[in-house]
Image (cartoon, rainbow over all chains, first blue to last red; front, side, top):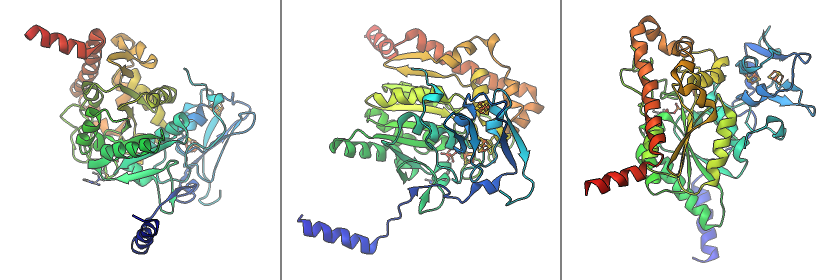
Length: 103
Length: 314
Ligand SMILES: Cc1ncc(C[n+]2csc(CCOP(=O)(O)OP(=O)(O)O)c2C)c(N)n1
Ligand code: SF4
Ligand code: SF4
Ligand code: SF4
């Protein structure tokens, strides 16, 4: 097959088939923080930086500062409460969201 | 090598804003695959929750290149993809990431074929013990006594033991893991990725929706499954079975956490809670698991045992 031929075939394919390719990106289902009914709040006084919450958070919405102090990405945290449940020193409290859409 | 958390770079391994339910074990598991193996990985995903977790095109909520494919073809497609990479001189890790239905029922023949050919792929079964994506129907991996929409009064049959079936294929590596012990899972992924041939990892994935528990308990239930002895963690490598560190204590029945602690927080076992006689059925599952482990550990090399038997019969 010549180069020209293969280009033609590909061009034809492009004309007739639209191949949908999705690429990894934040928010493929929107700002999932709005799903939350309770928000995790980190008590920095109590936190020992063990990183368990960071390890277990399914959404990757526990973030680490330079010194490994943890904080929450409220745009996408779904409020499951796993971070609070696995914290060995109860440094994360689940606080009811006051009003929807306030974050 | 034990995994140290602070050694992991501060990068986003998961993909926030995906379509998974809060507390989803599959997003947890996929994040650990990224932490363990990095970027040179392609996933092959048959239908299941992980097809949906990706969310809406043009974005994807899973942080890997993915080939979405039909149930019957996942393992064979992965074998072909791996061969294509190899012919290009690339050693990209190709992983089938499938549910328990996709593994133990509908995709079983393709997986068994790839294992028999010893194709150089990794197969991970994210076992949430039912067909969750279509609304919680029983699979052959749903455990005894569990409610699903097709087992209203609790499943009457026992859970199919897929890891042991894969050991019987005599592939180079078989392991069990759970999202309750991510360090153990990450260790096993890294080990498996270095081995050439067919690798199988069975990942127990407690599911807050299908098992009816509070989503904050996903990790805890993964740990309880191990601590009750119901889901032993082990590795099978080159004909040798080893019980993993997190499970060693619980091989002695008297050290195990009572099974009631595991079932009382799961709505799917409400029937068992009403009828303590039936709890015996789950206790039998624990015994069966450990019986197989004992047998394999003792013989250490089942193929040599098989050869021995053949010799004796001649
Ligand atoms: C051949 C075929 N049969 C049935 C279906 C419908 N279907 C889509 S996802 C799914 C459930 C998959 O369950 P499992 O493999 O356990 O994965 P989970 O959703 O639990 O992650 C089913 C039955 C299908 N897509 N193709
Ligand atoms: S509540 Fe759940 S999603 Fe939110 S930070 Fe904690 S573990 Fe992550
Ligand atoms: S689990 Fe608790 S102590 Fe450990 S890093 Fe998170 S908040 Fe801090
Ligand atoms: S049903 Fe279970 S496995 Fe499926 S997305 Fe929801 S939590 Fe995850």
